[in-house]
Length: 194
Image: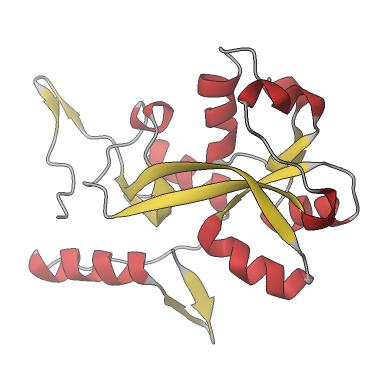
């Protein structure tokens, strides 16, 4: 993940990408985007690469190439601890209101995994501009459950004074997402990080 601290960018994704560039004697310039803007900039050709713990999904592979996975992102479907919502079967999801940030990997998961099996549909989801706003909605009981990245959850719990419990967990590989380069016989030299 990538963070801005004291006017500088920091994070494991940046360190990996710096190492990649150093090994190939190339330079890079960072342009800050929000989440949707970052992915859109790469797919439209405005940026060459995006990195910030980007989950590798089939839908994203249609518009971007990816490095080899260097991290597994685990996310949780969480509820307030005092509500004690426990999902033992995904068919139970229809009883609850789920929220998450607009444009996130969770949307793809609901569309490709939960919706085809009849467990939950995208139309049922309450979308929020950011993870913080989705979690505030949970805290205010505007939703029953929220999808959130496990690593970020620790910070959100502290900053929002939020007592939650996990109801369900999903894991996806993450990589660096360069612009999809095409030639007649297939993709061109995607970043290979091992």
